[in-house]
Amino acid sequence: MVSFRQPFAWSGPGTRWDEESALSILHLIENHTLDAATAALLWLFVERKASLIVAAPPRLAGKTTMLTALIGLRRPDVQLAYTRGQQEDFSFLREMEPSKTYILCNEISPHLPTYLWGERVLTLFQSVARGYSLGSTMHADSPQEVVDDLRHAEVAVPPELLRHLALVVNLETGYTRSGILRRVREVWMQEADTQSNSLSFRAIAQWEPGNDSFVVDTSPSGVEALRNRLGLQGDLEAELRRHQQALEAWLKEGVRGYGDVRKRVAAFMRGSSA
Image (cartoon, rainbow, N blue to C red; front, side, top):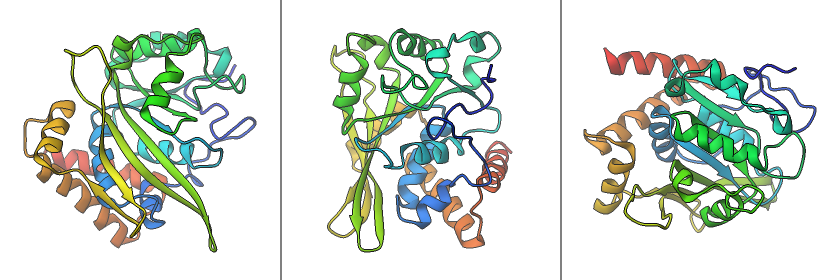
């Protein structure tokens, strides 16, 4: 039996995850999959253990690569538990503290037995409602497609559990003369509205294909929505700047490796609590 502490078919059946070869968030900023401002925004969510799904319709869009890079920004005290597809029995929940655990699922879909589907997905979201956090990938082009798949009759995750999903990160893939183009097309945040029966997502960052740039929503309503979702009492824009400046400084210093980024995040968090 594969340990829940080890990645399981993480990049596809028969694959093994290797920290040395994994792309960090700094690699993805460098290759312009996203910019430092968007990465800083995502970091704020991961730092607070927000549940998220990275989604795109095609294969090889970079979903697992993006999820892996984002989870590398988690707090040092947060541990990872990897699901094992249709073998999963969630016995690991007895050993892991909800407030300090990200449950990572390689993919939510019925396509392969190494992926999670059916009642196991419902169990996954019930665990999130208990305080665990979720990171996964899906084949979907929008938050609505994500929700539709999660409410499929074979899965049937109810709206009250889906409310625990904070982010959907949609990726765009295209082809250029120099190769495959991958971009974070939109970052969608589920708004913290407990009064409505519907699930509402708001684009808080998006890619502008015309000039190949990224825009983070810093409008008054956008900032207020972010503060509500993050539960942030302080200056949101100052926090975003602080995280962005850290990423830019590490890039300038030549930091790239996944393990090196983990060390920098730990030092950053120690400085924040000093």
